[in-house]
Image 1 (cartoon, rainbow, N blue to C red):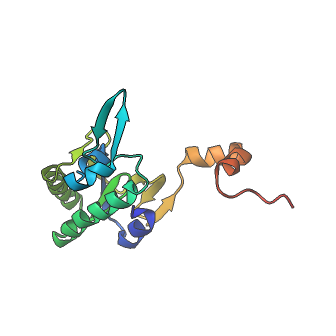
Image 2: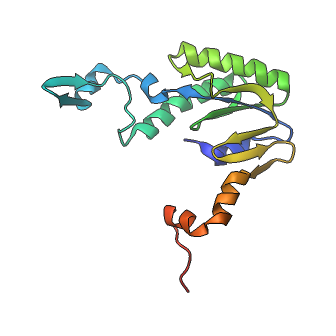
Image 3: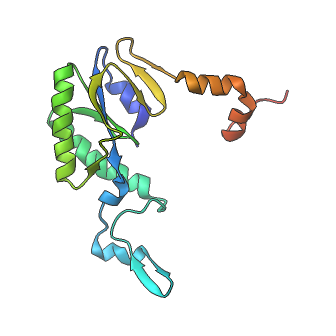
Length: 171
């Protein structure tokens, strides 16, 4: 996924943001018939072949990102700035442009076989929005941690460090 680094490079001061969430996004990526033989299993004496990208496949994030980069390139040709991540986020110079481009992007995604999760999608343009675990404020061009995450780290820093790849020094 492109994530926060790409997002920071595309973000402009005062941008308006919308967030488009895809429902079961991996399941929208079909597997060609010739490759399905590599994605099969047997269960209770029945043989199954997967016809869409499974979550459990180690290369699934890579395949999905490569697939979606083609969509992102098409969007860029149409003048749409957006970042591919767990949640897709679109940014535009004006509230109206963000709203219009979001409608166009949703239409494009649906035409390509993706299902938009409208319950998690944020279509009302905002200059402050949560993205990839960060709060984004385009008026200040600032990324910050939500207060709840900061509180969790302050409340019990050892539990945070135990869950991460890094541990505090014992010196």
